[in-house]
Image 1 (spheres, one colour):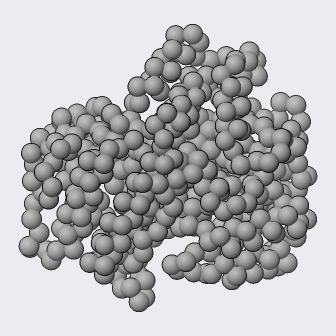
Image 2 (image 1 turned 180 degrees about the vertical axis):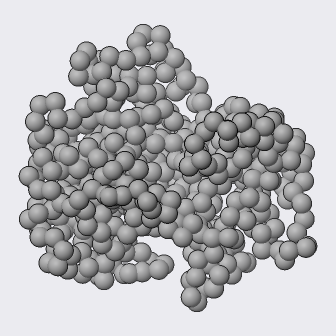
Image 3 (image 1 turned 30 degrees about the vertical axis):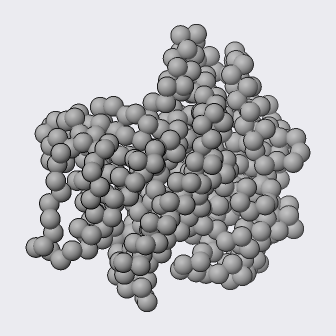
Length: 451
């Protein structure tokens, strides 16, 4: 393995201080808030995270996709601090503030709308999705919504209903919102193909819900929690055509795919089609709670007065940070950097797929890449246990990785786009070492060394 330059491990993972805090957590924090990686953060900088035991990791989890500009970017910190010294809150609809308007102007200038467009801001991705459906229902005067197998759109009532994966997100938490219908999502690896999936969508409009009853189709260009499944171009174009034919609002969920993750500011730009509404969150404000709906003005203006809002939506401190995020993208060329990172990681992943039969698929757009683990390439039986073993081995070696997929058998890349070439090379070496360790027969596996 290459000489460590960034990762510094002073204790076993987890360290004693992390274990102590996690033991305290067990007594006072609700059990459903389980911990995926047992390291307690003390400080984050760029692509690195240092825990309370003094261990420094390379972070490929990125706050579940919130840290495309990295941990605590100086420009973001400065902007948020400056705004906080002025005022922290008024509720924009009570006493408005300029930063809200400025952020809307800058985002809409980047968004792929050809005509007049407007924005509204919220706190979390799930709020953006729920409000996008409100806009669509107000505009169309229709109640129904169509979502896809493998989708993830949030954890509040309507968005949880739109979400596909039952465990852990939905089981035992019903009843769910009415008038939500689910259809297959096309994909190249497991199928169905685009034509089959589009036929199923058309059939749904005959057998389950009338087209004139449907307000919106909500879709991720690349399914996030679903395992970084990339929508084929033919499929996305077909969904747009169905919406056009029947007057349905196309809501593109860019909560995880947005802000450069795929090498474009918005993933839908890869497809050459125009959405009606876009939901954004996660990396919009570098980890501060902020989300939004961007969309065609006629749709955004359709709800009645005061039908959209909330006490904390569009927080000025988060919006100041969001403006700094846009500055960082421009000044540091992060869209190009995302493409570069993606090319290097994909090349390495493909080499791993040639070595390890358990890697069934390598997929993604830009730096939004994933490995899917299977027990058999022929049957494609999912292998979540191996994915877990790789994640654990990587953490022991100083690289933090995150799983995904409806079978929890994928490992995804959500690294900050500001990571250096040296950090990227080091992370890939550690990941490869973790793959070798997880594939080794029990009894011959070497322990991770500390430095």
